Image (cartoon, rainbow, N blue to C red; front, top):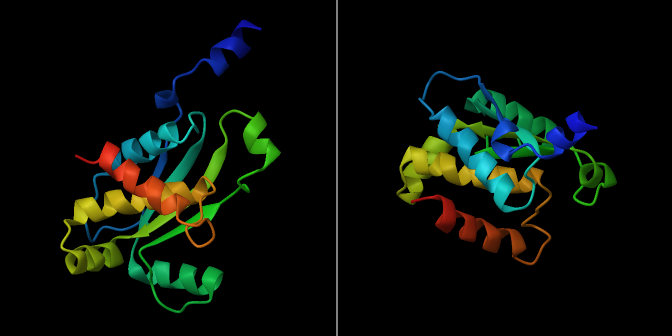
Length: 159
């Protein structure tokens, strides 16, 4: 009984964000990316949830985009949610792994230059965006809810 209580009372900082860096072309602040994903999950009420952040190159991203979306080009970020937003399992279990966020550092670097952002800031934006997707938000179907939340989180978390 005491062990179960202790498990439920854990702080979100103890629920780690897994980081996989499969590229070496661009340095990424992996600790910052994990901290930011954790902060997003905490802010949206997913304190016990976790996810995996992966950083890859364009070649691998192109293959993922082709295989899963039928688009034969790299993209900046893909999110692979393991659970549906209203999944009862997610609502009733601790330590829920929401899914994977995959970021292409090469595309992120190009997009940062196009938008006049630093590479680090673009990575932060992509971490927030991908984290919201694996948590069940979808900007293509939600009448702007995800976009508004994403802008609010950027203001709150990025200084």
